[in-house]
Amino acid sequence: MIHPEHQPDKHLAYYALLDGLRAGGCPICRRVSETGRHLMKAFLYESVNDPEIRAQMRRDGGLCHRHTWQLASFGDALGGTILLNDWFAGVSAAMFEDSRALRHSRLVERRQPENCYFCRQAMLIDSAAVAELSAHLADEAVEKCWENGAVLCVAHLFAVERICRNRPCWKNLYSVHRRKYAALAAELAGSLERQDYAHRTAGECPDEGVWLRAAALLAGPRDIGVLP
Image (tube, rainbow, N blue to C red):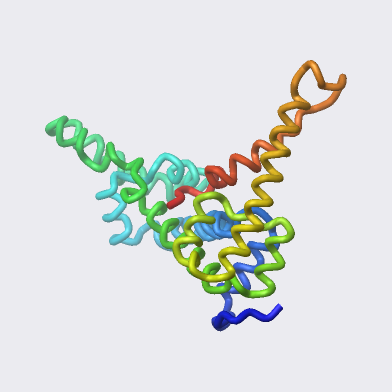
């Protein structure tokens, strides 16, 4: 297929994008998840004593709920103790000061993405991945992936639309996604019917994968941290 649109140069980010598309699911969610975990691992091994990052995290009041526990999942007790010593000392000290100041500090507001170091990194990764996909949306290899297991979640589908809505390749992408979403909606309806006790065959197990795939498309996979 020959496209009239200008095709940008292909580099490492393009091939990483193709790998994500071929793996199935939302390639942007996958990039945010995988790159985010690599960054967190590198942080624990290389930057946990970086004074500038530590100071920023103290000002933030630590990390959000999701990234605090994702950090803990690496099992790095020394790194975790260094960081929690920083953050918890701030909370403890603030408790002896004006309680109103503590309630309105970032220690309490840390659940907001802009107040979490790794949420901010996730948003940068997300924006870069959306831009990379948008730049190569008319690429033949990219288009082939949509006919297989690749599918954008709702948030990333419309993030791409904001960049590509006036390009012919957007119409093709949206048409493919309408079919995919309609097919999943039909699967959900069928799964619900099969789980009705009045229709279930003895020993039949409910299809848990269908509703989990739908959840990932609506909210993003459970481990990606933050969506735009």
